[in-house]
Amino acid sequence: MKAQPMYVTDTGYKYCSVEEATHVMIHLPGPLPYRIIPVIRRGTREGTNCWSWNGDVDKPTLKPSILSKGSSMVDGVVVDHVCHTWVNDGKVQFLSDCTHEFANQTIDLIDVD
Image (cartoon, rainbow, N blue to C red; front, side, top):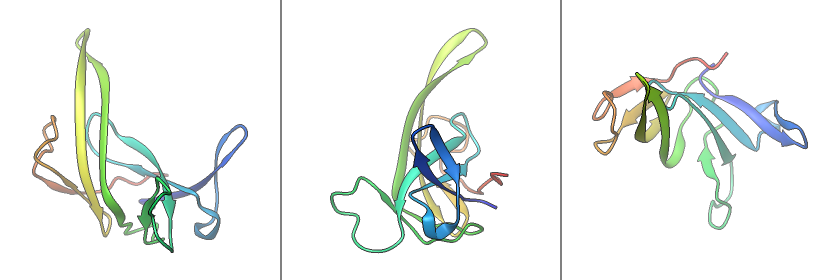
């Protein structure tokens, strides 16, 4: 499974069916591997702060692009990262503004199980 459907509870996220999903978890290669994205499967995104998701757990497509920024410790030094991607049909297209080795590449999503 490349996309894990989830919804929010008072205590965190719970796994659920595609029909119940308010979020989806994906696993990307790179320094910022896991993302939990708020999603809708139908209707308009306008004003929702959500991404549209095709509802496919094996070949997910998310729109628009996903821009993530974060830091990690590398050899005792804090390193800032930018990861900007498109997710289409279960593949991740890393855009040129990524600050890691996957910039300008398209790679399969990693299973989330």
